[in-house]
Image (cartoon, rainbow, N blue to C red; front, side, top):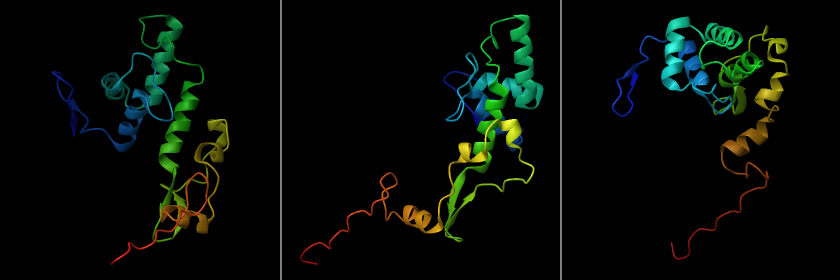
Length: 161
């Protein structure tokens, strides 16, 4: 429920909704989107607490950029909001293997109204191509190498057992 830095007070994240927590993490920088310079986890939490979601915070940072007040936000790229949406869609819908179905599925169902217009690209560009069921099962069970797609060498049972 909280994060503690060396000699710093706890960061209380207990009142954040799941979307707010996700927004805070993306704002602080993640695999899919680097942070805005000057914004780490503490500043991201402050922004979410103050503005309630990342999009309102991004708009404020862009206004600061336009008005040149302070330094935070001065390096907000023009396409940052769209890149943020892409990162969020990737987190929400990345492909995972479902062992019960024996196939790859999105982590959360993709809404029919998910618009590639807001993303500026097709979902496949963010999520990768569909994976055929048989290939997905072989990958998930460790039968084939994930890069070469070649079967792993079979292991012989140890001698003398």
